[in-house]
Image (cartoon, rainbow over all chains, first blue to last red):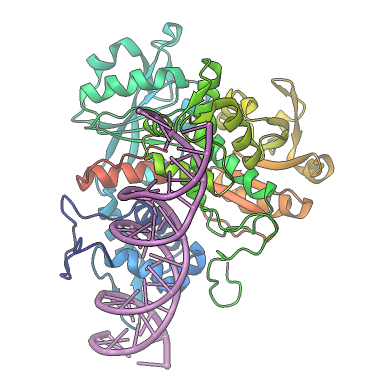
Length: 231
Length: 231
DNA sequence: AATTGTGAAACTTTTCACAGCA
DNA sequence: TGCTGTGAAAAGTTTCACAATT
């Protein structure tokens, strides 16, 4: 293990500033959290890593290892308490706090995000909407009044809204990312098919449907065996 | 999912053409392809792995290694011919063929996908739309007439349409995946926040916005250094 | 002089396998 | 007995560094 002590063998529950947990682990924790929510709502009280692994289509060792970076949440011989594990993972991911999100772009994708049920389950709330088309300024989407993009700096309070989701065309992404970074927004998710240069104080993620489709066409074209992971 | 004990993910591949190319490599090839398109359209004729690496925010060795799995496309001392490399990568990803896609679900997300400009650049064409709300049957979205979901099996020709994109609620995903698999669809991309059990003959991908947001909230909450990768 | 292509090294992630505990 | 937690081994991925080539 060449990671040379990124985790002391102590039972630290919270990792501090510099431990290096892989992105894959974080993404899996997110799926565990979502599965645990469903199990909790169906009244399941306890689950073993083996059973959870079956649902997730991964190995049980993977689950135990992922959790071990953050502490010991199970009971030997018994498994994990569903609600307790869900709460613990939620805390690791920061889902115990309410997250206010600004949405930039109010086209079809923006509206789809506004209606997305999963958000509030995760404590995510879109609280402001910005749009460059002036004819839309002042119109309502759900309970939120659309603001003009020129007012971004004026209307956003980064102490409240720390996340932004961009449902805008590729050519607008870089400038909006730059403006959001200046305001002090902490994280941005955008959907456009484009690379952006990322200011240091900001975490940026991209979700690009064409990349996903191209992994499909690659595998189909090259007749590769189906990879089991779906997330 | 219980397929007799827990299954260890079928990572092993016994197939004709390729050996074991990682998913990360395929995803990067997809981004190279998109960058090369832009370079081509701006008249750039040649690019070195170093310059491409700067754009992509990765190392040049990574690019050369990714390409080396598939052949030698550059000229020592000179770099790569932009159009030629774009064509070669396109061929690897299967983008030299036209892909007809069926869309299931015609809500906001479905409409956003219908309007998505990037698709045709990649030779992706949504040619059929299915919807469970009968009041929408027969209405037009763009140039396509919406069909009722009951007619899925009747109206889909898997020799033409090999891909499906699902813009439907989580509770409908599993049954649609099962039906598409029976018809002989080869690849499915869905957006709902949910794991599905995947029939053997089908490749399934999931794009889940809450997972992306949770990687953001994790990093912000734990004040981890910004990871450079944005895609 | 510049830059590819690639083995080998370095590093990361996953899986194994079992001690230890309920 | 059943199942977790975890070092160690195995597998996988990225980076290094340089011979080969234009």
